[in-house]
Image (cartoon, rainbow, N blue to C red; front, side, top):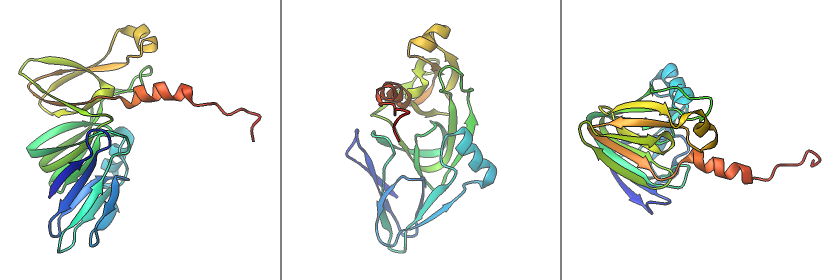
Amino acid sequence: MQIEILYRPSYSVARVSLDSNETIRTESGAMVGMSAGVSIETKMQGGLLKSLARSVLGGESFFINTFHAGPTGGELLLAPSLPGDVFTLELQNEAFLVQSGSFLASSEGIETDTKWSGARTFFGGEGLIMLRCSGKGTLALSSFGAIHEMELAAGQTYTVDTGHLVAFTEQIGFRVRAIGGVKSTLFGGEGLVVDLTGPGRVLLQTRSQGAFLDWLLPKIPKQSSNNQ
């Protein structure tokens, strides 16, 4: 399998070249187009309980699409729902914790499960409910905005707004907390942050979906009760 990222970083598309009889699992709705000979199968991944956990806790689709290439291989175009980048990781029997909504696709050797990593709060509406992606193979992630990559040294701590977090290696220590107290959480535009402590790799996104919605929703005209 080979993945080429086109049009980055604003409106990225992943062009996936599949070898003979190769498969790739994708988030529901990620397919843009595919070549002749590629077939699709939609099913729950890991049974009912794991699929429910992915959907309810992880914010991902209940069903996963699996694309199968024919004997001559095939091509698949994938894109995330939000404008932004696509980033690939080559996992070598390791694990990444991936923020809800950032999973795009993975090769057959990658397993995904839900990891509870801090409760959602009444104030911020944001939590740190992660997908654990582990194994050996290719993992494709998406972001809202561009990807900013960091490498934390042993003992180095970096604080990140949870709305900007995409993924980090499992060995990184983390602590979720509110920032600035109740007044700041309610009126200051800040909610939950996570303190990440290395060593390990961190992927951030340059825009926050929650912050964008907070800006957009007040600008949408409200329908009058007199309108039919």
